Image (cartoon, rainbow, N blue to C red; front, side, top):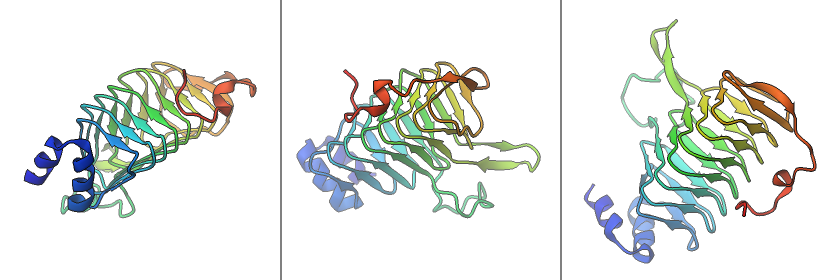
Length: 220
């Protein structure tokens, strides 16, 4: 804890070196971590990746950002790491508490991301707006125990503001999840607008839409 506090107070050039030396993180020289409390067991940040101020990321096995990936301000990212003696999730021997953010993907700000199981955010995807919840774990009422399932968000997707994504859900590549939706199952049809509570396929998306072919993650 003392080392964590010391690194938090250092200027970034020294802080990056300290995080690599003391915690064995892998941070590209062009990546940047703001005034954020980010201490997973393993942190990997690619070229020009960024985590902004006031984000918290703890109790994770791994947090990985591809090149140009961003996590904005005020996000709460937590999980339940696998290197514990707790009886929770002991039946899931292959579970990993990870957040994997692909190249040029963006998580904006003020979201809650529960990584008790792995969450994958595909390249060039956007978790937009505010207050979206990713919840990978819950109580299995049939077995009376905690259970978790991964979440996968495909490449070139758009997750609308204030949505809820539950464990086991899949949003396929080149698709949109409308604002305030509940995604609670696997969908496979790409180029589709999904929405509602619970979400369902609403209509196809035009393949000429420029969002799905952009080569830069940031949308001006």
